[in-house]
Image (spheres, rainbow, N blue to C red):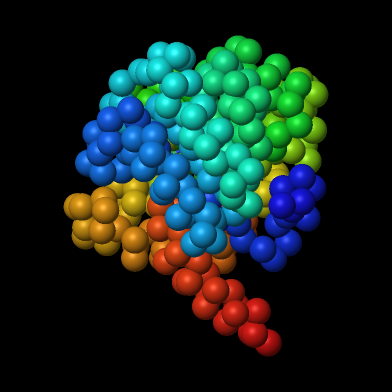
Length: 283
Ligand code: 8Y7
């Protein structure tokens, strides 16, 4: 997809879907959202068939309260999946990691995009690895500057102005990347829904995505099945949050989001098709 190479073009009308594949050695260790190797590959292929433009492969849960995973462990989870998919699907492969060694090996194995929930801040080597590659990089805001990590980030997130602060933080991350030789054309920004944010913060961010347009970069939103969807939609079971997730996704697109990170690719694709056709017919 050349759209991602010149990703300012990426983005004109086409909204990209990023399908989520979480890998652990033991299937269904996380209530069915994480998959063992054979099922991870199968699931990724299914998402690609359903119309995912990107498959996001992660081997370390960054959910609130998640345990750390060693580099070797993470590599043994994600590398076989990347190798198993490379050349077999037309979707691009993104590696969801905050570790430089994992980025480097994943790129060698065929990953096309770096997705770092710490905006390349967690590992001091990450900037260098990203700069020496030619991969697009997703810079997500995750409260790293305040020392936030997945274990503690939800403890008591405080902002005076969540939209302004997340914008400013991303602006600094972009400058750091440019300083390290990662051209702006390679960057994608993401306010990091659910990372170091309360439900109210998430809602305020999603309702005001227009402010992120000033940064002049494609905007990715990952709201799929997250806690605030459950709260707003009254659904405690994360597996049943597709309708609410789709509502959030379409709203995000109406505000300028260009990439949606989702679990339910086919359903989101269908909803997007209808929404976009109507939006484009508006006189
Ligand atoms: C996001 C993400 C997760 C997100 C980007 C979950 C890895 C939590 N969320 N990456 N990763 N944006 N770029 O519930 O919102 O999927 S993990």
